[in-house]
Every structure is written in structure tokens, then in C-alpha cells.
Image 1: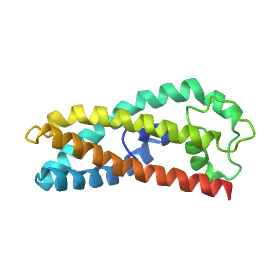
Image 2: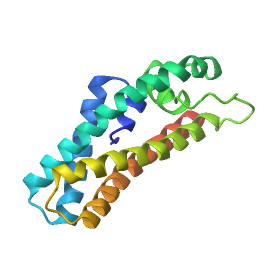
Image 3: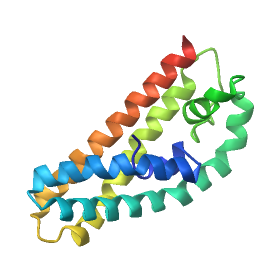
Image 4: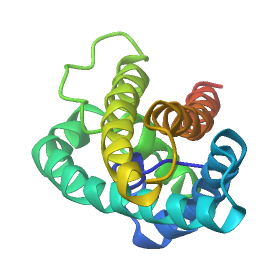
Length: 172
């Protein structure tokens, strides 16, 4: 399960972005339903709208980051020899922030990926909080803000676990 702005950054394939957006929308709708006590239909519609907007916002960011740092990352971290694992390798080790020289540390790529994840989380929460004002106008602003923060915390926690598993797999 991936989240919002991070979708286009970690999954540049449109197909996989759409596939992973569905569970994000459902989980975040469940959080909005439980925390804001709105109807399931309102929670689902708000989650779908908010997540689509933040995902679309991530596309130009992903293009810019990969355009700027992708060629550098390709030189620093060679692609995985296993074609089935190449998307995991690309997501974890060729993250856009991989502009640092790869020294003896095997953790430069994962550290960059997790650092980028924190930045993307903050950007997602900001965009979704702004969109939440339109999608959930009846909810109390403080409750709405906390619910959006919690919903994205759940989504990004799942992404962090997936990245950690990818790092573990690549080093075992």
C-alpha cells in the first residue's frame, strides 16, 4: 500500500499507481469514517478526491526528481541483475535523492529513500489538509486535520514497511 505523492515517485508506472491507489483510498476512507463519524459514502468520496489530487500533484514532482537525479542515481547504483526485483531496486536504491556518492556504506540508497519518504509525507499531509477543507467542510477543522494526519500516517507506515522489506530482501 503506497500513498499519494509517493505513488508517482516510488512507482513511475501508471498501472501500478492506480493499483496501489485503491487500497490507500479504502484504508484512508476507513480512518476518516471512524475518526470524523461521517457516512461511509462521504468518507469514501472525500478519500478518493483527496488522494487523487495529491497523487496527481506527485506526478510533476516525480518527473522533476527523476529528471534531475535519475541519471546520477543510475551511475551510482547499478540496476539489479534480477529483472523480477528491478522495480524494488529502483524504488529503494535509485530514489531521486541518491545524488550522494556511494561510499562503502550499503545504506546510502535506503537512507535516501526513507528521508524522501518523510518529505513526501509532509507534502502529502499539507495538500490533503488543504483539500480536506473542500471535501469534508462539515467536519471540525482540528478533527479533520488530525484524521488526515492519522490516515496518511497509516498509509506511509505501510510504505515504510514495504521499503524496509525491500532493503532486507536486497541485503540478504
